[in-house]
Image (cartoon, rainbow, N blue to C red; front, side, top):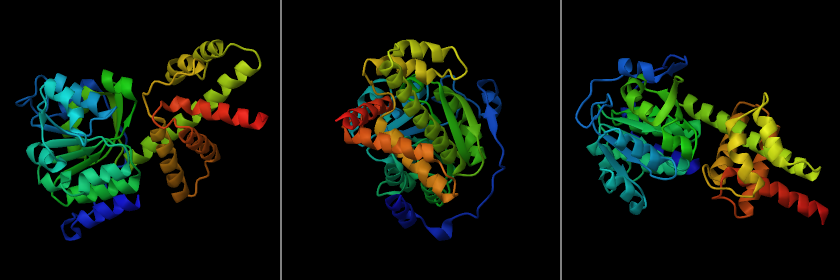
Length: 345
């Protein structure tokens, strides 16, 4: 967070910052059926997507690549950048263009999306040397779909708006498969006009979108959602291990849960592979732990006790120490196994 603050504060020109405008604190859920009413007329490169202009996409990792791919397949004119250039190649083969820096992507596009791994990366790509802000100007938009803390999002937003461009935070709920299938949930906040402008693009990449008002609200909502998810996975892991320990079939537990009040797609999707100790990465464990860390900081900032999350965070940290950082977050069950083994010695 300190590094992110330094980058954005150093890059921002305070004298150019517009006065703060409090957006309406209401929640809007816009469905695909209303996308046409919220969007502009179809323009060149639209290919059926009611968006006028060129789209930039920064960050082509496990989430960014399928999101950008869906935009290209929908007929959008997309320009991409990634720190490791080879990750751009699959998108280039689909018809994307390439620019060698975030600044050049932002300069060549009307709206630029960014999907980065953590607050530090998000701030560097937006505010650092050759960052997106250097290529922005009035009339352009910047949409950060990364998961960051509210303070970092606000700092990025201040730097972006100091150029005269518009800023929208839009972290997503969903992992690799929903990203591939265009079924993400966007939790947006910031410039409402930009939200309406990019609504058709969000609808290509997601199944629903919420508008939450001021910058920081989208980031907070995402952290709360991922906080609940991370804690649920720990409890589910404990249930699988306990069921097996007392002689029950953990696969049957997964089936029983799927038919009851606590049914959740996550349990049905992850359970069978967890029983086999297989953790194909859809959402990296290191990112789940990062989100718990940020959620704990958010809770501390408002004096809200979240002891269950604090305990879960320690287990994810333990799993990282076991070399599981890049495995799926369901691998947290291995930390519980290791803890049980050490207590028996």
